[in-house]
Amino acid sequence: MKEGNMHSHRSQSKVAMIGSNMMDLITYYDDSFPKIGETIFGKDFEIGFGGKGANQAVAIAKLGGSPLVVTAVGNDLFGPLVKENFKKQGIDTTWIKTVNGKTSGVAPIFVDKNGYNSIFIIPGANSFLEPEDILQMKSVLSEVSFFLLQLEIKLETVYAALDLALELGKKVILNPAPARNLEWKYLEGIYLFAPNETELHNLTGVNTNSRDEILKGAHFLLEKGVQNVLVTLGEKGSLLVNNTINRSFPAYPVTSIDTTGAGDAFIGALVHILSQGEGLEESIDKASGYAALSTTQRGTQKSFANKETFEHWFSQQSKG
Image (cartoon, rainbow, N blue to C red; front, side, top):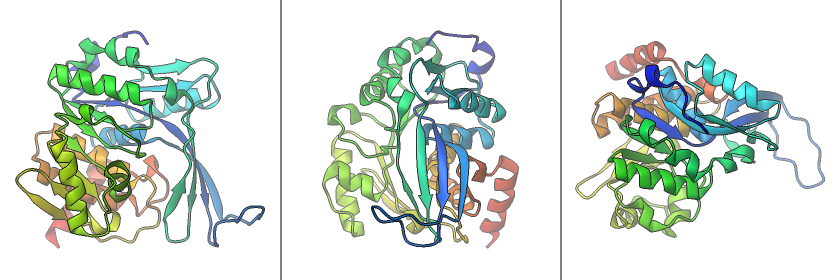
């Protein structure tokens, strides 16, 4: 990965998303999931653009931000499509690495009649975004305010990014999804660690069946050096925990038809709003609304509202 002509974009990019992209292969079904050896009819099928990192970056772009995207695609059919999709969202593709001989990442997604999803992830080229790719971007990354990370790329690359963020004095938002065993030393100084209930349990070993248990898991992470822990709770909202407060944020009531990508809509909106100078608690509340609105539409990135649509919707919610 070589440095390109980013001078016109550097001053605009407040967030660097270092992470994944996937092609979403989405199956909708009404009946129960097929058993081994069983064939059933699905209701519908769609192909979309996804991956936690890409989703979060697109949410930022749709809300008017200009994220610096660092990711990898394969030299297959999907690679050029992923790049073109980023361009359509107004995202610069200078830092997208093409990995020869590898497929792009794909995510088969199965959505039931209630809008709940089950997902497989095949990382493909995402696993070949290397620590060196991040380190050689030091001069570019020194000009952003936030590093946004997930765990769909190799952990060594995540750790390299965390080390670089610490060196450069940047705020890190780490969405530890999917949950993987982390070396705790790398959590020191992370501004915001944002797992869901399942990820919190898998990471800490603490049960998450009650608020007290969730608080216990969050404090475990605070003791490792994280500044703020934000546990997302789906339709129950989220819980922010740090050394001085714990505060619940209720979800906004909507009629959900597809929750795919809602967590990414939330994280992307959150880091964008933070990057605009809003406080953490105000940003969480507004991002909760953005995530809720995304569940009223099918798909992942295409369900994310643009800034004007969201601001209008959110102003109506506030009046209520």
